[in-house]
Image 1: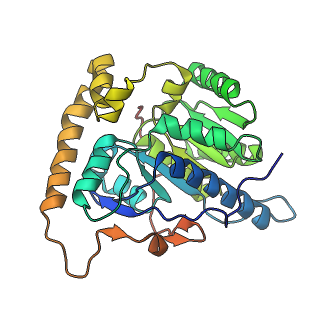
Image 2: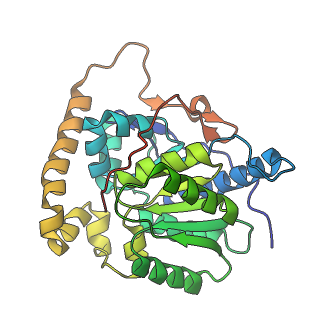
Length: 315
């Protein structure tokens, strides 16, 4: 068994650009997966270096990773708390093709990839990269049935990967003692990466809260659990590549998703237009230099307070 990549192995040079006030790291599919594995190595090093004789973990904060699409950014545009979480996140990735297009429109001088970082691809790519290493994965979210199917599928595809625990929490908001018990279970399992599939914005708040409590990488990965488990069909590749996945999902679940896409997409487009027409302030830069936002391989944290109450929202 080999160790995960150390903190000094991978240069983190992807540009970071703002979209509707949220910093998005313009990774490719490959570099995004490597970044997450890199962060997992940092968290393992932190736990090994900050564990005292009693076995208690030190105080280093974890790294929260968010898959941002048009709906996520539309919600953040009207929810100051969610926007604060995303603005101070360790890593925001462009999960939606419209987000990629918006970033290229808003930042035409930046060298940005033309394709997105798709949540299910990130999940499977990280599992593939971390096979036969010491990286420990924990699956948090969805229903027990979907979680069991996901666990089996990941074990089938990646027999050399290490899944150290799973949990399907109740739909209701958890009490404080339940959140503490859940964090303790994750800590006891020795998880390096916690995959959080609870739907936006619940998963984003939960990932940030976990990282406040534990030195882990918490990835808010959305509907990837359902797709990889085979519980829901994925849109054809040509629809995903052309930014039409939302139309496919709307056709599959119209009663549940019509409000999200009708109002969310409209707000996202409005926000992009608003940002595109704002005058550029003198001396400001459209691209946030990676060197300005990285501290020992992770994005610099900014002070923030997250709500203890996590709303009931599913992807």
